[in-house]
Length: 88
Image (cartoon, rainbow, N blue to C red; front, side):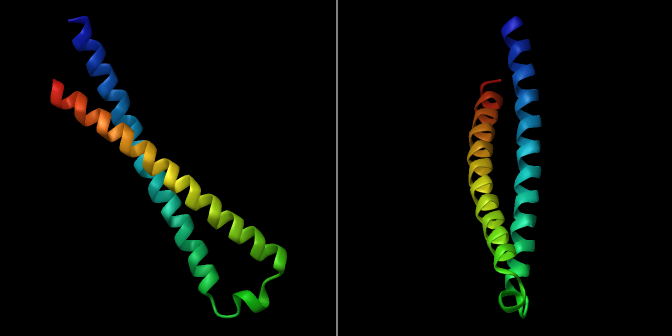
């Protein structure tokens, strides 16, 4: 009984985590899309200061890294959630 209750609590926490990670993936994908649009804009490279281009490129690289990390974390959480749900 106690084990079942604990598993149910863990499943609830994992569901919330998976939902939060999915939202973070969507946010990061949006950030990457906005930066890609900025990079593709006509005159961006000619009309944007070097320092700003560097900041934009660093932001893009950081968002890509965070996206990879978040997807990996989502995959682990979703896999654990699926395993626990199948065991119920």
